[in-house]
Length: 324
Image 1 (spheres, helix red, strand yellow):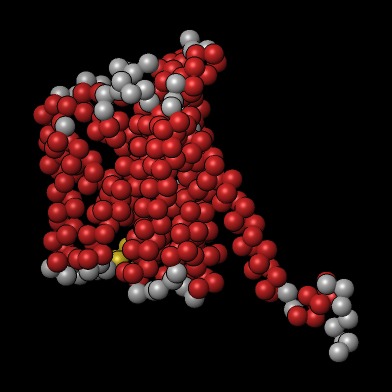
Image 2: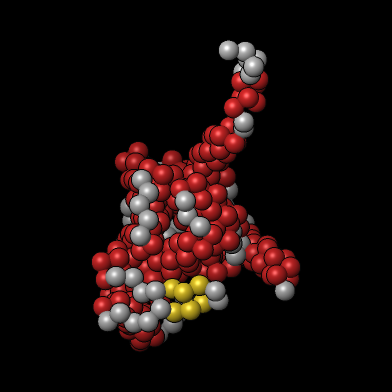
């Protein structure tokens, strides 16, 4: 059964990439490289700076995910170590897909050096994943209550459906907070027991998730022309597109994110939307991936050197281990 799952998810992800890439090709076949270059050139230095700042905000919020989870587990680890671990985890996992599984491996390699057990790392991964889901549901519910017309951007759904969806979505974090306040019993999932966090930690979860999504959406917003539908609309369309890309298990959400976002932004020139999405991939995915691989190399080298016997280290340095 495990073997089937290992094969199924990559196949599903690659299938999603293939199908969405075909639709994306049909959508963009009229665009030229020259027009795309002009769209990039229209992004002012100030908006580039704000896009970089939005990236920093998103990754800071992701580091907060881990920090909150460690607080829930009663573990104290330095912010620097947590920040680097979170950065590497998400930079790699977002690019290769199946972020829960790939993120678990990376986190275990790092946090096991700080004394966390396999069970604790498993709980941390589950807690961080739930923090994202909780944040996405909270933000989605708030957006639909505030702007129920956002659903009309996808298949012209009626506005009442958006309002009803907002009520349903916002009920989830409300019930979650009540469970935290009233100390509901823990939920058992497989071999893990997930206890409801204390109210201060639950509040942090409700803030961290939306903050990360706001930062990520800000990258695209600042890369779009100033004459765009506004940040709330961009945020709503991005939230739906990003969640769809994650569910598809496509590596980096390739193709899925683009076709969904383009469908939700018919009132912005396609070439500018494509330029903004490429900017998002550059700042949120590609550049962090390059830096994270460098961090992994340094970490693994130091860990390997720490496992080498003292005599081998001296011999490697050209010294005779028996000479005093």
